[in-house]
Amino acid sequence: MSEGEESRRISPAMIEYNEVTPENAASFHYHGDSSSLPLSAILFLPRDAKSRTLVKSRVNASKLYQMVVPTEVIDDLMAYVFRIKAFLDLVSALLAAVTGLLVALVILLTLKMRRREIEALHRIGCSRHAVLALYAIEIGLLATFAALLAGAALAAALAWAPDLVRTL
Image (cartoon, rainbow, N blue to C red; front, top):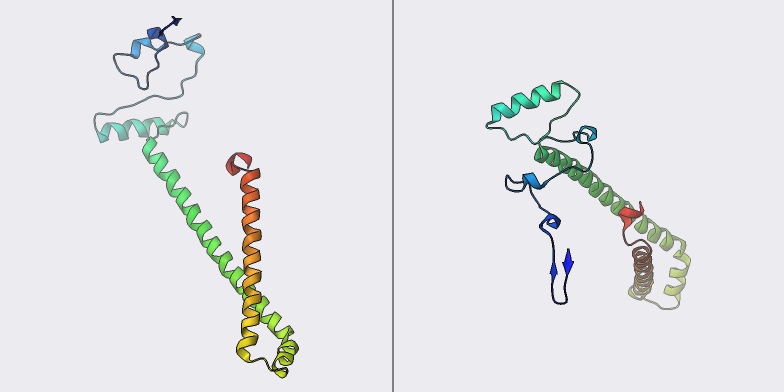
Protein backbone atom coordinates (compact mmCIF):
# COMPACT_ATOMS: atom_id res chain seq x y z
CA MET A 1 0.00 0.00 0.00
CA SER A 2 1.41 3.39 -0.93
CA GLU A 3 0.10 6.82 -0.13
CA GLY A 4 0.69 10.10 -1.92
CA GLU A 5 -0.59 13.60 -1.36
CA GLU A 6 -3.61 13.13 -3.61
CA SER A 7 -3.94 9.38 -3.99
CA ARG A 8 -3.58 5.99 -2.38
CA ARG A 9 -2.59 2.79 -4.13
CA ILE A 10 -3.40 -0.70 -3.02
CA SER A 11 -1.43 -3.69 -4.11
CA PRO A 12 -3.42 -6.37 -6.00
CA ALA A 13 -2.43 -8.74 -3.18
CA MET A 14 -4.72 -6.76 -0.84
CA ILE A 15 -7.85 -7.35 -2.93
CA GLU A 16 -10.27 -9.82 -1.35
CA TYR A 17 -12.44 -12.12 -3.41
CA ASN A 18 -16.03 -13.03 -2.59
CA GLU A 19 -15.98 -16.30 -4.50
CA VAL A 20 -13.48 -18.80 -5.80
CA THR A 21 -13.30 -18.91 -9.57
CA PRO A 22 -10.79 -20.53 -11.90
CA GLU A 23 -9.29 -17.08 -12.51
CA ASN A 24 -8.58 -16.30 -8.83
CA ALA A 25 -8.03 -19.83 -7.45
CA ALA A 26 -4.23 -19.54 -7.73
CA SER A 27 -4.20 -16.43 -5.53
CA PHE A 28 -5.38 -18.32 -2.44
CA HIS A 29 -2.64 -19.64 -0.18
CA TYR A 30 -2.24 -21.06 3.31
CA HIS A 31 -0.20 -19.51 6.11
CA GLY A 32 1.35 -22.55 7.66
CA ASP A 33 1.94 -26.23 7.05
CA SER A 34 -0.96 -27.46 4.91
CA SER A 35 -0.70 -30.98 6.38
CA SER A 36 -1.58 -29.63 9.84
CA LEU A 37 -4.74 -27.87 8.64
CA PRO A 38 -7.95 -29.84 9.15
CA LEU A 39 -10.26 -30.69 6.32
CA SER A 40 -13.58 -29.10 7.23
CA ALA A 41 -15.54 -29.14 3.98
CA ILE A 42 -15.53 -30.37 0.43
CA LEU A 43 -17.75 -28.96 -2.29
CA PHE A 44 -19.22 -31.71 -4.39
CA LEU A 45 -20.99 -30.65 -7.57
CA PRO A 46 -22.59 -33.77 -9.04
CA ARG A 47 -23.52 -34.19 -12.68
CA ASP A 48 -26.91 -35.66 -11.81
CA ALA A 49 -29.15 -36.74 -8.92
CA LYS A 50 -27.95 -40.36 -9.10
CA SER A 51 -24.31 -39.33 -8.54
CA ARG A 52 -25.30 -37.09 -5.64
CA THR A 53 -27.32 -39.86 -3.98
CA LEU A 54 -24.57 -42.48 -4.39
CA VAL A 55 -21.79 -40.28 -3.00
CA LYS A 56 -23.96 -38.99 -0.16
CA SER A 57 -24.96 -42.51 0.92
CA ARG A 58 -21.35 -43.77 0.81
CA VAL A 59 -19.97 -40.80 2.77
CA ASN A 60 -22.74 -40.89 5.39
CA ALA A 61 -22.46 -44.69 5.75
CA SER A 62 -18.87 -44.34 6.98
CA LYS A 63 -20.06 -42.54 10.18
CA LEU A 64 -16.72 -40.67 10.15
CA TYR A 65 -17.87 -37.88 7.86
CA GLN A 66 -21.19 -36.32 7.07
CA MET A 67 -22.37 -35.06 3.71
CA VAL A 68 -25.24 -32.58 3.75
CA VAL A 69 -27.06 -30.35 1.32
CA PRO A 70 -27.01 -26.87 2.88
CA THR A 71 -30.45 -25.88 1.61
CA GLU A 72 -31.98 -29.04 3.10
CA VAL A 73 -30.29 -28.37 6.45
CA ILE A 74 -31.53 -24.77 6.50
CA ASP A 75 -35.04 -25.88 5.48
CA ASP A 76 -35.12 -28.41 8.34
CA LEU A 77 -33.81 -25.82 10.80
CA MET A 78 -36.38 -23.22 9.70
CA ALA A 79 -39.19 -25.80 9.96
CA TYR A 80 -38.08 -26.46 13.55
CA VAL A 81 -37.96 -22.73 14.31
CA PHE A 82 -41.47 -22.22 12.91
CA ARG A 83 -42.80 -25.14 14.97
CA ILE A 84 -41.37 -23.48 18.08
CA LYS A 85 -42.89 -20.16 16.99
CA ALA A 86 -46.31 -21.77 16.58
CA PHE A 87 -46.00 -23.30 20.06
CA LEU A 88 -45.01 -19.95 21.58
CA ASP A 89 -47.91 -18.24 19.78
CA LEU A 90 -50.28 -20.80 21.30
CA VAL A 91 -48.80 -20.26 24.76
CA SER A 92 -49.15 -16.48 24.32
CA ALA A 93 -52.79 -16.83 23.32
CA LEU A 94 -53.48 -19.07 26.31
CA LEU A 95 -51.76 -16.61 28.66
CA ALA A 96 -53.80 -13.73 27.20
CA ALA A 97 -57.03 -15.69 27.70
CA VAL A 98 -56.12 -16.63 31.28
CA THR A 99 -55.17 -13.03 32.02
CA GLY A 100 -58.52 -11.83 30.66
CA LEU A 101 -60.36 -14.38 32.80
CA LEU A 102 -58.37 -13.32 35.85
CA VAL A 103 -59.20 -9.64 35.28
CA ALA A 104 -62.89 -10.53 34.88
CA LEU A 105 -62.79 -12.56 38.09
CA VAL A 106 -61.19 -9.69 40.01
CA ILE A 107 -63.81 -7.26 38.74
CA LEU A 108 -66.68 -9.60 39.66
CA LEU A 109 -65.26 -10.23 43.13
CA THR A 110 -64.76 -6.51 43.63
CA LEU A 111 -68.39 -5.85 42.71
CA LYS A 112 -69.50 -8.58 45.14
CA MET A 113 -67.42 -7.06 47.93
CA ARG A 114 -68.85 -3.61 47.22
CA ARG A 115 -72.48 -4.73 47.20
CA ARG A 116 -73.19 -2.69 50.37
CA GLU A 117 -71.58 0.35 48.77
CA ILE A 118 -73.78 -0.06 45.67
CA GLU A 119 -76.88 -0.36 47.87
CA ALA A 120 -75.90 2.78 49.75
CA LEU A 121 -75.50 4.66 46.47
CA HIS A 122 -78.97 3.51 45.37
CA ARG A 123 -80.47 4.65 48.71
CA ILE A 124 -79.09 8.16 48.34
CA GLY A 125 -80.62 8.45 44.87
CA CYS A 126 -78.01 7.26 42.32
CA SER A 127 -79.45 5.43 39.36
CA ARG A 128 -78.07 2.09 38.16
CA HIS A 129 -76.49 3.83 35.17
CA ALA A 130 -74.69 6.33 37.43
CA VAL A 131 -73.28 3.49 39.56
CA LEU A 132 -72.27 1.60 36.43
CA ALA A 133 -70.59 4.76 35.07
CA LEU A 134 -68.65 5.20 38.34
CA TYR A 135 -67.30 1.66 38.17
CA ALA A 136 -66.57 1.95 34.43
CA ILE A 137 -64.53 5.10 35.09
CA GLU A 138 -62.69 3.34 37.92
CA ILE A 139 -61.88 0.35 35.69
CA GLY A 140 -60.81 2.70 32.86
CA LEU A 141 -58.46 4.59 35.18
CA LEU A 142 -56.96 1.35 36.47
CA ALA A 143 -56.46 0.08 32.91
CA THR A 144 -54.84 3.39 31.91
CA PHE A 145 -52.43 3.30 34.85
CA ALA A 146 -51.64 -0.36 34.16
CA ALA A 147 -50.89 0.47 30.51
CA LEU A 148 -48.65 3.38 31.56
CA LEU A 149 -46.82 1.16 34.04
CA ALA A 150 -46.37 -1.56 31.40
CA GLY A 151 -45.08 1.03 28.91
CA ALA A 152 -42.59 2.36 31.47
CA ALA A 153 -41.40 -1.19 32.22
CA LEU A 154 -40.99 -1.87 28.50
CA ALA A 155 -39.04 1.37 27.98
CA ALA A 156 -36.78 0.50 30.92
CA ALA A 157 -36.22 -3.02 29.60
CA LEU A 158 -35.33 -1.71 26.14
CA ALA A 159 -32.98 0.89 27.62
CA TRP A 160 -31.15 -1.56 29.87
CA ALA A 161 -31.05 -4.53 27.51
CA PRO A 162 -30.99 -3.25 23.91
CA ASP A 163 -29.92 -6.64 22.59
CA LEU A 164 -31.80 -9.24 24.58
CA VAL A 165 -30.38 -12.18 22.61
CA ARG A 166 -26.80 -11.16 23.39
CA THR A 167 -27.72 -10.64 27.06
CA LEU A 168 -29.24 -14.11 27.35
